[in-house]
Length: 148
Image 1: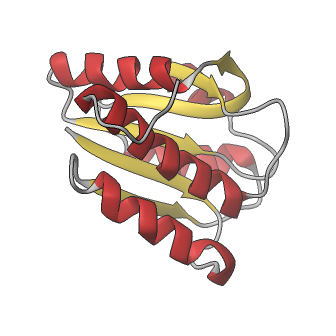
Image 2: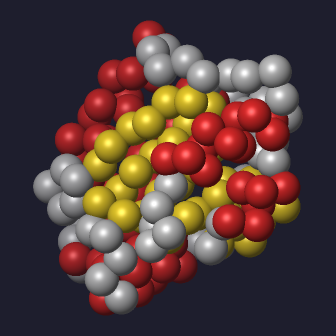
């Protein structure tokens, strides 16, 4: 399975790039990971159209959204492991724009995950997401990174 992170906004952010790279290299021990950056557009509907054009019918889509389900790291690991067992080829994580995502993206999502009740800038969401993906993989593999 391949992890694809689609994020609305600029690709480069010097503040977070080293941390993202640090955890990305760790995730790569387990699964391939790809970053796709979607340029801001005039409306979230237009951003949504761009995102939808990149999705395949068989992709499993996880939307990060404040209206989503609040889960623990173990539940994220279970979600990922179940998709691996289901032979999902691409698991897509979508980080929407500053004003959220279109209804079309909300409807396309297979799962909606609330990262936190707090609001974070994109650069931090990217770091937190890739760290949680690494944590999930260590939970799946029974490794010592995650402490209960």
